[in-house]
Amino acid sequence: MSIKKNYGFNLLNSLLSIAFPIITFPYAARILSPEGIGKTQFIFSFAQYFAIIAAFGIPIYGIKAIAKVKDDEKKLSKTTSELLFLSMILVLSMTAIYLILVYSIPSFTSSIQHYLVAGFLILLSVFNVDWFFSGTEQFKIIVIRSTLVKIFGLSLLLLLVKNGGDTLGYLIFLVFIYAGNYLINFFVLIKKVKISFSNLSVKKHLKPLILLLSMVIATTIYTTLDTVVLGFLSNDTEVGYYTAAVKLSKVSIPVLTSMGIVIIPRVSKLIQQKNFTQELTLYTKSFSFLVLLAIPMVMGIFLLSEESILLFSGSKFINAAEDVKILALLPLFIGIGHFLAFQILIPYNKNTGIFYSTVMGMLVFGILCFWLVPKMGSTGTAIANTITELTVTIGYLVLIPKRIRTALPWKKILYAIFGSLLFIPIVLIIKSIFTVTLFIFLYSVLLCIISYFVIQYFLFKEVLIKEIIHSIKVRLYGK
Image 1: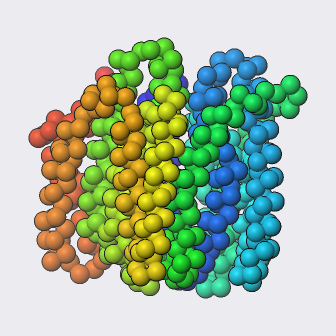
Image 2: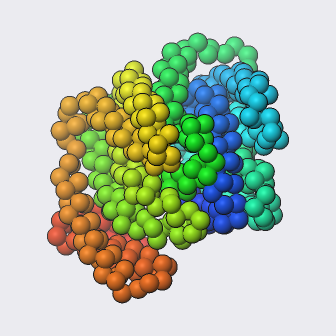
């Protein structure tokens, strides 16, 4: 399947990932309040960290490992079986450690039922085999599965969360969104390959996986445990504010990273073939796409922070607006970081360098958190998170091959910034005309999008926009 079709399916999945929290989180936030959301997210994030460790880097490594053997049915089945076997051992081990901790920490025992439900996230993560479908470039299956789970998940949310005390119901919903995907994935997988746990060679996978695991552990300190750290150093209400701010600032990130999931298996093959010309072409398009979207997202989130929080979470979360302004930079930092790490460094086997960058980020996050959170609560965590993402991204940038770094179209960043500056007068004028939050948000977004793409198309002659327009014309009118 072509990159365009793969990207189309992955983009659709990313758009669903954006639409889903926009529908579900506002409903839950208005019913559960900041404290209820904070309590649930703390427990879920605590379990999620163990699930991430149990994954052992397989979701990243598996894409590359499967892409190498996807054309050989026997090797494909063997590699899949080896990775599943490793996953089983790790998941059972981490589930046991999680349960020991849950029953050992006195403050957890009052919500033991919640922690046990969250534990299923760890146990069922053994069935998380997205790496197989990404490695074999079967993105259509991922989209269909994700759509079905989201539809059922929405029904589950409406059924289980009806009043302020339904935190357990919300937790069940959160676990299902992950576990449902895992189970469907696995049932499809066993029909495509033959799983056998005899004559396995798992040792060859351990070295690259250990490096990736180290990277993942360091990364999740500031991407998953940020909520847990805030919960320990502050309270559930501050966790609720931070959760709302993070979800809002990160809601667009799946679109920015969707290109990377498609490119990883393709660029790995090009590097193996030493086809550097086509490789640079892919990187240039991917980087241009990222910058074209990320920078206006940053500006839009910053300028409409209050309106976004009011619409997304409700008036009880208005204190999170300042956190949103700080976290507005995340789409750009995370988008570029994902591009550098997953599209360039991992295919080039620079896992050690990634590890050092993420460890540096972990240290920066730890220092800033313990310094800022006791005094500033959720805002302190937001500052720590943003600075950490910038630190890690700079570390990645230093590590990529010089020929790639110099070939990237850096001027596109200036074009995007220039095109986004017009958002400032547009939003200020609309705020002076309208008082209704929804109208301010809708008119601002509409006019900002139009002005931005007009500038990119006519002034900067952006090739990607021209290609999109051409593709639409071809579909509507034919060649």
